[in-house]
Image (cartoon, rainbow, N blue to C red; front, side, top):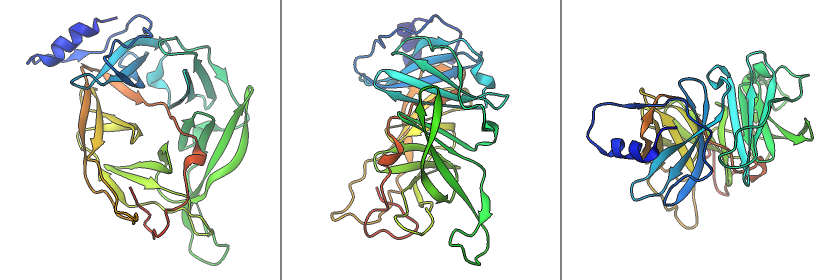
Length: 307
């Protein structure tokens, strides 16, 4: 495993060379940060899964702690994860359409063996696979329908299903959204869902009635030099063309009192960047369960947006 101290020296120096991610030893449980803030995971160019940490030193950094799984994660169509205390559970849809679960018992530990879960479903068709600490959110490509049961023109709604892990299987719970509009959710936060749509960040709530669950308007533009965004507003990051991971943050916004539906149009800008390049995927474990998403804030009208 490369020496992180040496990497920080290189990152701070005015050099033209870019450090590339290479295979390493198993991850160390200690991040070595002055103040470790957030656990992350990245897939390197060789397909190995590394554990990362965002550190709150004088200059925020994203450090590589080493390999936690030696499978080929670059070929895995869908990857999501969530943390519950020290345990992190990874869910993947493999190339053969199987849903697979792997568990990391604690920070720095290698992932446990792969376990196929609910082989009765065709998981390859899902457009959303999003893990939370105690649930798995799933939806399939939209089908045109009239949610009111009347004679309105078909609209491409989807149902966001909630599955609860029980033993070695899954039990379906009440849907999060029965008639959802727009791109798949990208994260669940305290009070709202999050969506990445092109270079826009959005928020979503429950409709609170018979009306469709609407897609909110833009709540901040994202840098055009990043792609492959993952995570939520507590940690939102993407990859640049060289495969460097960059965390972005939005300028703080204080809503009026009493709160109204005012959009924070401030753009997201770079906050912390990994010293190494060559990452092909960022995985940010979910931290909030779907029941945290509330109804539309009082006084809001479509498009729903308040922050």
